Image 1 (cartoon, rainbow, N blue to C red):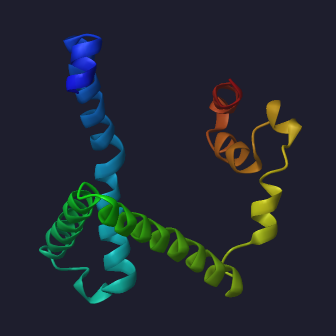
Image 2 (spheres, rainbow, N blue to C red; image 1 turned 60 degrees about the vertical axis):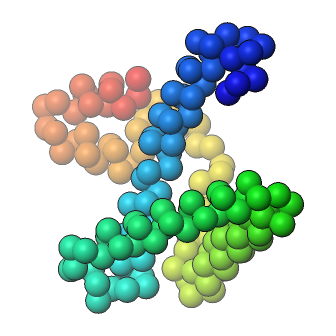
Length: 149
């Protein structure tokens, strides 16, 4: 931030800092809720009714995050450890996807079909949205117009 302030303008440096904070609030904080619900649903379902559990999980996640960032700033060894953690997370994701595919819980053909564009949807809503619009009765044409807008 000092470099930006020195070479460009202090206003840009402050705007950069505020934008960074806003981006973290918008994109990073929801990850705590996602991780907490995932932990409570999949790893510790017995703690799902406990009001203290989300606070404990959030605290563990925050402490882990702070330790990882401090380690990253410690030099090449910290960066290597950080990259190893990222590699483990990415590998775990692919492992979960592979297990879901093997168990048949992911419709692979359905996912692949999603990559093929359906040009008729430019002029007609999807079958699911068409059913929802039809359920509004006399207002179906209004909703079809909103969906296709």
